[in-house]
Amino acid sequence: MRTINLSVGSKQIGKSLTWAYPYGQKFGTFMIPTYQLTVSGADNKGQALSRVFEVLRFGIQCEKGGSPKVVGLADQQTHIIKAWIPTYTVHSASSLEMGAWQVYDNFLIHDGPDDPKQEVYASVGCIEICNGPQGFDQFNDFIISLSGTTKSSRPAQLAEIGQSKKMIITYQRATRPAYTNVP
Image 1: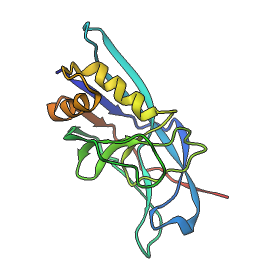
Image 2: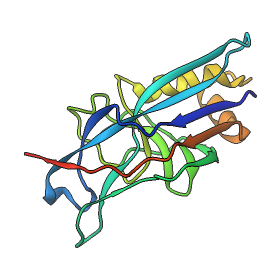
Image 3: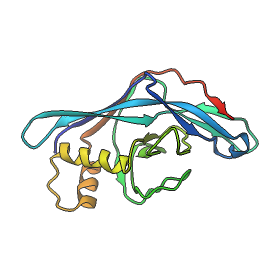
Image 4: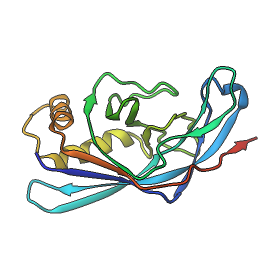
């Protein structure tokens, strides 16, 4: 298995509609920034490859009886991906793209809005892969192409990558962004 590096940037590159998860729908819709996630490694021929994905990095959380607040990992930090979770489904929107990568605890990498300016997803700090259709599936296809997996089926490939401890994510230090209400 080959090492795969993921780096979540600190500069805002776009915008995404969202709502305050899980109890903040009464506050309406918000706009938050999107960020760049760069995935890099080498293919089976040893050629260095990288690809950039637009992602949600921060989200807006609203606990029962509380007010909306921005959440997510803001400090510079690096983690080894712990596992592939094949049964994970997005909680805040409808998605056919199953599964998630576990960064640690409940911080995951999973499907996000195909069109972040039109589709409303909510997050409490997971990395959500945008731009589709099937943006998360494209992300996973690229991960597989960099991995060196020896398994033949897609589910087995993703599981092997998750168990390999060869996928590393670095979060660049970023300021938690402000959000704006969308009328």
